[in-house]
Each structure stands twice: as C-alpha cells, then as structure tokens.
Length: 244
Image (tube, rainbow, N blue to C red; front, side, top):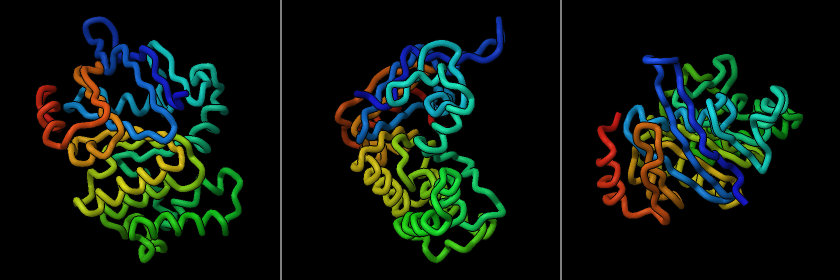
C-alpha cells in the first residue's frame, strides 16, 4: 500500500485570464521505504507538489491521502498533528529558529511531541553527528554557513519516527561530498520504512532514487523505474526546458 497518494491533484492561482495552473491532474504514489525524485524545469510545479503533499497547501481539485487517510477530510488540528508527528520537511529557506542552537532546533519537534528534553537532545545530537555537525551543535543559525544550516534542517526533518520525508533541493547549498552525505542519510531513513520525495535538479543525486518523476508545465510527463544513469537523466530532463 502506498503511504502517500496524490490522485488527479491540481492547483491553480488567480481567476480568468490571470489564472495560472501550477500543477495539473498529478497522480503520484509513494510506498513506504521508497525514494522518489522529482525533476523538471523552473516553474514546472515541483515545489507546489511538495507543499500540497505535506498538507501545507490545499489542492484546487483532486485528493491527497497519507497512510490511507484523506488529508482534506482532516481538521486543522489533525493536520498540525500529522505534520508534527509524521512528516519531515526540508525547505530551501531552512526555516530554523534563530533563538535556538543547532541541536535545539533539531530536537524541538520531538519535544513538542512529548519526548523529554534530555532524550530529544540526545537524538538530535546523534542526527547532527551523522551529518558531521557535532562540533556545531551549540551554535546558533546565524553562526553557521549556508551549507551547515541546510544540514541542520535535514537533521531536523529526519530525526525521530517520521514516516514521510519531503525535501526541496536538499543538496542545493552543499558541495558534492556533503550532498552525497545527505542522500545517504535519506536512504538510511528509507531503509527503516520512511517514504521520501525529493525535488532536485541534480541528476547525480536523482540517480540514487528508486523512481524519478519528470514534471513539465505542471504535469507528469515521464517517469523512470528503476532510474537510468545520471547522463540519461540529464538527457531526459533537457527535453523539459531550462533549469533554474
């Protein structure tokens, strides 16, 4: 059974002549333990797909189901609980809290979910160590480089018992070595049953996925399963248009 399902999901903004279709009739199913990469040119709807999949935005039409439950049928409190307990997000903007240290940022969702501060911080520290950030645990976000802030946000998304990971360009601020470390961490999460969707323009990293979905003009135009080589992915994606 798929853990995440999007069924004919569309999202548009504006009305009449000013109406813009961000995504159109998208079907997507992601099973527990699988990693799906989403590729496409700028403006193809990749980020919109993620925000809808994570219940941060409502679709204009269609249905989103997580673990068999319709997201649209949930109350606001139920959605908040779902995001806190089940879904880990990696945003391009990092969204770290300036007044908390690295380890406090990572541990915060666990504490909000009722875990003791001591245990939450221990788990947060373990996640930071896995990404080579143990020596930055006591530093605040404004004391970190962009790449370090990105890795802290990834540690926060993966720590704990979340079952769905949604990542928007998780390697965007990282060099190739740290980018691969991030993908290994995501794959480790998948091996313990997490369903993951990663938006990326990096064909090398996309080739790590179990399946690659291509978007163009808000529609799924192709998908590979299993994924081809990075060179083949680049050739396929070049048909969709220029990258950002």
